[in-house]
Image (cartoon, rainbow, N blue to C red):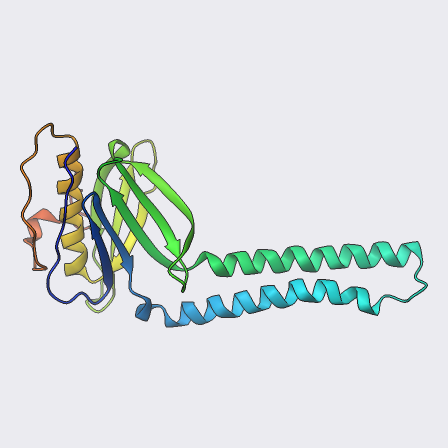
Length: 214
């Protein structure tokens, strides 16, 4: 399989990139998710306080507590701790989307990242399992577009990224080309491409015919 190196030029406002010889990683830029970052911080703090509170409950237990009181405090403490861990885990899960393509391994990974640029749960998709890629353009010009991936034997498409329509068009085309190159025995190396507005016929909306990469 060919090692593909992409070089992007121009200013990118809604997504950011890390490029490698094996593919690319695109993620939604953090400045679009200020409210979500604050929500994440609040959830982490709340979860931590609940876990700490589960231990403090034992301080209010009477010195000569009965077995019934101990069992009651144990249940309440366990509930506080479990709820706190769940809230904290949900907060560290993150709200921004990231997509990583490894053309050598033949996988596309979708995950959500937190404000520390870390992702806890990723979904790996074999490139052979991808049926099509398509953009869903917004009804309002200022709203973000969405890049979807349709997988074989799945009715619902997967949301990979949201962002500026023009920027997602470039990613859309690159994904299609890299996936096609991964199935070609001796592909012709692609030239690096700067960001530009691509011809509409290559990129259908959700109402148009989807772009099948392979």
